[in-house]
Image (cartoon, rainbow, N blue to C red; front, side, top):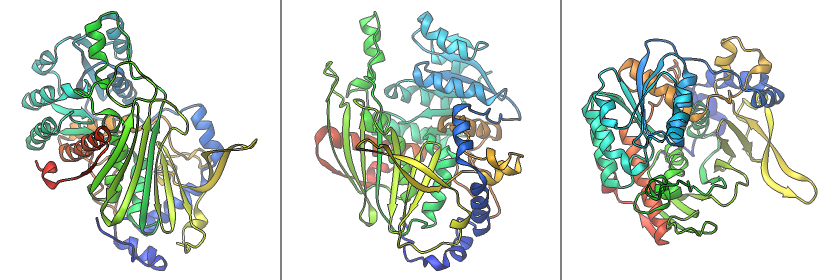
Length: 461
């Protein structure tokens, strides 16, 4: 990780003009963000706008795995528009209600119960692999060998060995291989990354992230055999637990922003609520150490939904918090002026602290709005500018994959500009593999209660 903490704040605009963030573009964005009103954001959240649809040649798609995640992907594909031509949906479980839910989203698609039939169909150009994590390997390897573009959900696999095999195949393929690290395709997350990478928050000192959602993860089924298959996330033999099945996205965001792999991880967890025979914890706590003594605390639970999910990065001058499609910066009182604050809009954010009789505590921060300048250029009125809540991280990841399929190579989810001619590409096999290694080892630390030091060899492809 490059330490830019010595960058003089008074020389900020000059420094970023020569670096990854152009001063002119940043100032333009601040002006645009300043014109967007909080009321417009609330109105948009209450009544979502229709996301822009892709144009160009249609991509013939198959979705393999029709569980909740597969159906989320199908919903995003349906919203992308005619470019996403879903011709086949596949799941080995052919119960009418299961298939009916998926078919309702893409009624013109043909259902098949064997992924090999999908790969044998020359009409299929690209596949989304949304099966349980432990079933990814063979499907991914066969899909690459069949010459299909591949989107493989994260984590790539439930073991490092399987993930390495998938990544090696994806890295050596002539087709597009995209890992499902959806945060890296989220323009809001990319926007926040520009502020962090340009040392807007000063020297990074600590980070925190959480994911709270009350859900048992258990699915009932009349067939004992099928119920066991559906509840693969509850067994250590087939699941990477909360750190892998959920936390991988937040852990990867930290590694991406910090531009480094973790040094070590400590963790612990347990089954705090769902005493139903599972051996995967429903609550976990982790401490991940990065270079330069930066540590990130992470916790996730299925027992309570309070305060949802977020990623928080704190530095000597400011903190930035990212909550899916919204983000705020909170400056320290002793931080110097950077020259753009006058353009910035201030928003209130609930911080989850309930005071006696006062309700949820609110803090006022600088709203960081992705693509405000572009939205104005496309004809939006200033009061309408804000994050489009319909463009979820998954939607943007799906969109990026389809654009890559159209071009025949991985592209950036963000269009190049003069100031940033080489924005990061959609996540490929290497990014997916490294994130999977971190997630698997974090889960191992939770299960063992021990500290694990990361070894360079684990990341070798």
